[in-house]
Length: 391
Image 1 (spheres, rainbow, N blue to C red):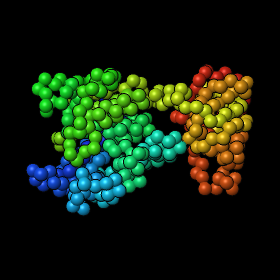
Image 2 (image 1 turned 60 degrees about the horizontal axis):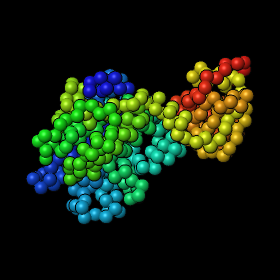
Image 3 (image 1 turned 90 degrees about the horizontal axis):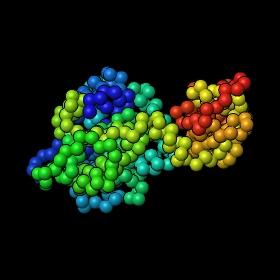
């Protein structure tokens, strides 16, 4: 697994509840955050950052910690009570991460997400931009599901799939699920002596899915089923996923040094997967007619600026897909709009200075004025780089 870890520019680390929590007795009563384990993980994260890697942490444990603080058992709670317990435990959970990372002069940020934030395009785009900004500013996002706001019908209920969605959102190269098991087996190794370990999974077939069992920890909400679902999400988004044991100090270092784990190999790289999603999955909600200069700019790999748009059609929201047309009407590209149509019609054909002078945009920051950023844009043909001056 060393290559997938060491070559990753962006790593998403999912930490299971059973790894973070200390137990007071044989009855598995929660005592609090395991500060020794957390300090070791923070040290691993600091080493990864020193190599230039960007790190996002998706952490479980809020519900279990909240139940311990309130003196209740999760099995006895309804949804509203579980949400209240999670809100109580979230404070201690984030404080633990903050204290551990601050020992290495690393700034952390709490980010709470719901299923809708990762599945609805406009909210997805907002969350993606926030996470990207945090990473660019050197902060480590500490992510958990926003149990206080999520409803029973619109919640993940586990952080395995949430971590995979986050990895896809930020175009991460590798997702690591640290759990209480060191990889995928053909059967539960605790129950079947003949269970065989699988080192690499190229595709999650029905036969692979049939190997999944139930949850391995009373404090966690996920089991092997959710980990395989996370693997499908990660693979399809161009992100490698590694399932590994976190039941050692310095688990990330141990993994990089060759500890046993299962690799779910990505089907493409993150950017290719994202471009395919834009090109083939999303239905365009509007059309932008470009001038020749904008066509040339796209051919050179640049973003689409408002100044290069002649006119627009359709009613769309920020994050919706746009069809980008050359002067002769040929569709040459598709991309995600950074503006709603009500705003876009005000800035078509204008440069950054002219846009900033509009009273409707007085509250905007114009360090980036793209109508469609190049990371959210895919060429469908090879545009003819004919004359024109706008780029």
